[in-house]
Length: 292
Length: 74
Image (cartoon, rainbow over all chains, first blue to last red; front, top):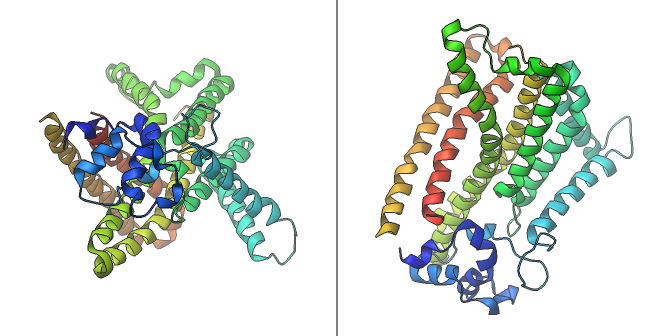
């Protein structure tokens, strides 16, 4: 590929967003109207490629909701909007859904109750009874992630959890919580987590270094697992959509493939939220009982 | 020319997802063979299954990340 393509670093994507749109906008995204900004690196890059009309990574571009100025930390973007919608969705499901408090629950109420019981049991089983003090936090994490994942599956929507910026904040919050809780509950005894007392004495310093590294890699793998899975799945769907765009009306195979991958993505959306939550429980167990 | 080398590197990094597939298959397959021998104990181990799968899969996602960095950031 040409040198232009390399200009499109992830950081620049946000700014170059409208430039990218201008190329593809000719076909399918004319409605945005903000294409006048154009003439950016991404524009030239996609233009030089000339292959797929639907670029798989364009769906992850952060754009301001109003106008097309530079994005500052306070700018309302599509990421802000969809995170807000995720919170509204959680509110509707949990607060409005369980409002009736019927003895024979309605559909929404039973979904809310099942979710509550599911997460509560998970916290109790994995992290122990004394971890139930953290149940509201873990429940919030799970509901936000699962709602954001499912909202991201709506065609044309923006998947907030596909951005490492979002998942890294969630994972860092978990990491800091767990570390602080570990030191508050156990004092210096928390460092016993790194001193494997079941290993031979000669090996323990080496194992301590390995344990220490693996402890600090936790927030990295925790966040990248969620963001990577969601982003990869959505990019795969868009790659097949690109094939369908090239083939036109005869695109039977890509459409079948998109349907199949979409079904898989519905599964992944739930499983990744589940995995994120259960790993939070595992980390919490380590903080509360560092002896193992 | 450097861009071409980065693309080759990205392709090589994608081999990592195949390695992760082996790891995930190993975890799930062993879980299934254990679960078929003692189905009553299987339900209590699904959490462990998912944790194992998540750890195996994380490394595949790292490979995917390397591929993405080579494609878009280098």
